[in-house]
Image (cartoon, rainbow, N blue to C red; front, side, top):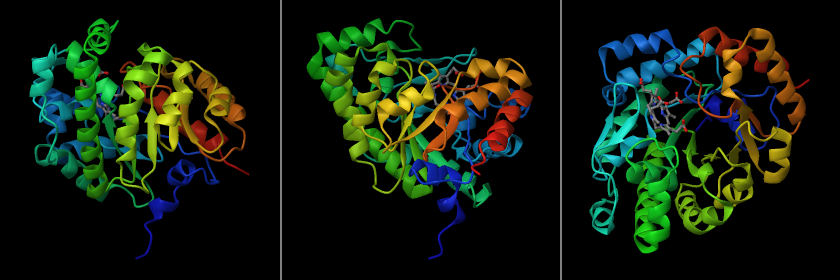
Length: 348
Ligand code: CP3
């Protein structure tokens, strides 16, 4: 069978640490509230309805990809949707924040948590993948994603976006056996979910461990790493895995050792320093501070050049933000960023 051209795209090549003609760029949360087209659709449907309407979810992402000119698409979905078929009640409040109606607080709650045996209830995600892949140019890869076990556990226990993570940390230390059982269920369920995404047509997967930066290195090693590794080890070989755990650069060697081919880097550490820690055998993705997109054209272009200079010509770099794009971002600024990466990131 003839290889699809996405297989030779800058994004896929960089993920495999191969030389590219240009530096690939995409933005976390590239489809979202900062885009007028997105806000218009959200006036008619709720966020969860949008995720569960594959034609519309695909349209939202395809519009963003076209508007920005990025080198990859990511499916329009959410890391928390897996919690519903596992038995948790998920809602998004009018201000956008998630809420779990029946959070996990004790051992009987852990027993009630259902390991995902089939992805039947998440078939809408697979359909979003099919529609997005169909509408996407053959030269662009599609990224699937899921939350890492710790970040899913943090939402499941806290019940919302926490500031200090006191409940999840207490649970981890006070109920280590229940913790292990819960983390195992999240790891196995997420592996099944990501493998289904791969079978439905994504070319790479990204694992978001968005809240792991709240932990010490010692606690990460003891309570989290074995389950992130369990998940990553179960993913179908041959699909590049992006492992993103922002917030605490001290964790980078352990995040790398837990697995993945591309390590996501936030802005708290310089990209060259992070890459030296992670090692040249790995690709890296990052790491512009999303706040820079709230400034102006000159500052954005200088910041892009600064990161590209730090990276130099090492193969395996994917340009991204250090975390998701902010809702207040002017669309022109996001376009300026993508154009600047394409202008200054040409390898001559
Ligand atoms: O990158 C993309 O454009 C693809 C879509 C995507 C969304 N969520 C859409 C979304 C992705 C990759 C996610 C992942 C996600 N979801 C994460 C990991 C990434 C990260 O930021 O660390 C997390 C922690 C969540 C959970 C979540 N979903 C929160 C905390 C919120 C509310 C706050 C916020 O940032 O908006 C959501 C809602 C959400 N997910 C929106 C979008 C476009 C906004 C919904 C709306 O109001 O329209």
